[in-house]
Image (cartoon, rainbow, N blue to C red; front, side, top):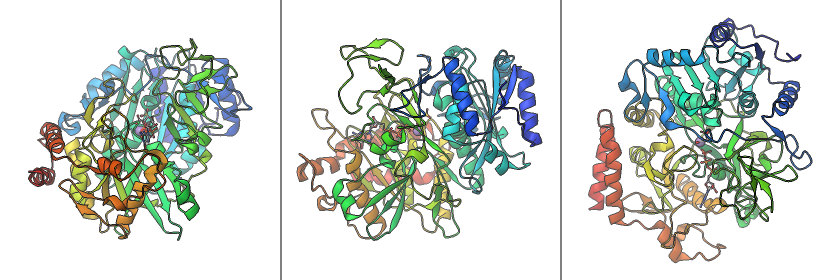
Length: 592
Ligand code: GTP
Ligand code: SPV
Ligand code: MN
């Protein structure tokens, strides 16, 4: 072993957890991750030596590395993701369930000797800023250097976590082994009552960076319900007016539906000149709890961005390009001849020769994509030029608006405002979206993805809706709730709304509504802006008729939509809150 990785913590519960795990998995050695710079250099060198990573062109991409995953392991696998509770009813009809006994029996079998011949890394980490009452501690043991290196970017790792934990026993126990990276032996198992996660058979981000979707959302939502807070699949941003007024926004869009882009948005030039500013707090996960002032306060528990690469360029998302310009790990993108990265939708000309994400030669004539559609960059959030200086604020920021939004070719208008908190919860609960490459299977089909949490709610979805309604009762000044759709298409199949930075134009109406300065009109489905309330000046080939198309509410489409929403509600009949049934009835009545 190196000179690193030998310093054990003093916390007895951590030592016991590691000892018990090692007795089962029998690693050749244990490496105690400390989060230091020296350790980082050592681990990258080791990963390169072992052929797991390629060091990229350091002049073009200082501190950057490139890895390919097994082609059978490129996205989250929802069918292999389980919530394990004593009673099946606890997880509801939308989660996969196994009893803790049965799942532990399977996993103990798979983990027996799983780390033999390997190093077992012990990663202590924080989700949230050190010292925040919302922050949670996790300890992940893993046999994957890739997990260590990615976790070092995505979470606050090392001594800082042991410091926050002290001698407490209150931490999430995470166990990971790649095994032989075989979908036949792949499980992502959550034990909410034990505050434990066991993941085997994968080496892909969302399945194995246990702080992210597993702890921050699945276990987090379970803890949040019990402890009176919310764990949500939401970006967080701050919009600051020329007068210096700050409004904070949380937005839930399903996987690969625009959170990273919206969180890092650069406003069109005329707004920048006028003095408007957008800063990023987070791009994927928000933890929120009621403050003493009756408002909802949010933190971003993460420390980095695990962002979708394809489609990211200096026009669509310059801040993401800057974020990934150094100290970044790229996974499953394509490699250029001079050891830089490339993906579909990057700026500039398509290179004549590439090595694709599977390691094969690629030319512009090739039929397959050079980068996998779910290829990603793991970038430190501190690289983001638009990072908010409030990301370390221990009490978080007060949320003015919650925005839901799916990927919908039809039906859903560009923006609408909920009539009330319970109507807003209904809008989130009935949300649909076309599936993307972020999860295996089902590309393009519209499915219900309530609050963008279908793959991430750690307990029964009906009860989760109930928790949302309860939170509204606790909040004296709840955020206003909105819904957006950047993805409506015209009859030729083109996106109608320009999107990206121009989403600022919609955000300004939303903020105007929160601040009482913008007008709205009532429609059957929610409050809508008047055409003149959305500034379209300066948009190319986009006039008032197009805006009207984007905002259109078509009653026939909506009647069909209500029927589709009802399919989800029927599945949840046992625990669906009455308020939501009434909201649905009201909507139907308004539509007829
Ligand atoms: P996860 O990290 O999977 O949770 O996804 P995310 O919600 O952060 O998605 P991201 O921002 O990375 O967006 C994914 C895809 O949506 C990319 O292909 C983007 O180009 C596309 N996208 C984002 N914003 C817009 C928009 O305003 N309009 C259009 N048409 N596409 C967008
Ligand atoms: C998502 O799929 O929503 C992601 C990527 O943010 S992963 O961390 O893999 O879940
Ligand atoms: Mn996500």
